[in-house]
Amino acid sequence: MQNTDLISVVIPAYNASSTIAQAIDSVLKQEVSFEILVIDDGSSDGLEQVMACYRDDNRIIYLKNETNLGPSETRNRGVREANGNYIAFLDADDYWAEGKLIKQYQLLKEKNMVLCATGRSLITHDGASMNRNIPVKEIITYEDMLHQNWINNSSVLVKKDVLSEFPMEADDVHEDYLLWLKVLKKYKQVCAINEPLLFYRMSKNSKSGSKWKSARMTYQTYRKLGMNRLQALKCFVSYALAGIKKYYG
Image (cartoon, rainbow, N blue to C red; front, side, top):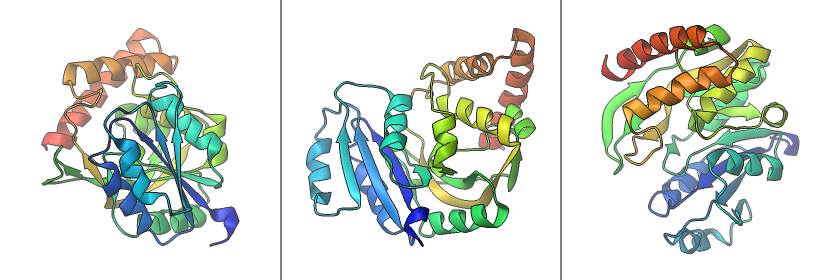
């Protein structure tokens, strides 16, 4: 791959010392030209000591926020600091299957689209397989996304200029869902690979770990998008029903 096709992998990290190595190591196995930007958002659990193990690898850039900025601004910093024309987000408690990035890169080129997602395999908070894969539509439209979030943040490969146009915001809602809705509202459709190329950790401590809290955040995401209360409620009901089907069959 040419340097113009460098992929910058942005990993925001907050007290992720127990999982960060697995995330980084899964990127190191990817068969593409990449750099890894780990942005420490004020960790106090020894993350810096874990990152010291990677200090001799010049593909890995370790940055530290002066204060805790939260996930949106931390990812935005990663995008600003990135040297690649493509951005892949990876949360510090998730990891990838081998071949993920090259498959996405090739599909983006083939489809001439701005974003590519993948399916995912669920793992428990301690890393055990849940024997549950979440599929994804191979072409995702804005209308699809209004009723179900088909795009998992850690699965995405997206053109950097798109993220510069639509920076993440609003950590009080589902900031990634809001971002992808904005992207699709402009670009109409994106592509995906219906394979579980992401291993997604069902963390007990995620901000959406509470179902009721997550529900409120989803409703507020629609409101942040500019919908009135009735429009937001209709989309939320559809989203909730799709979520029940997705996770519980």
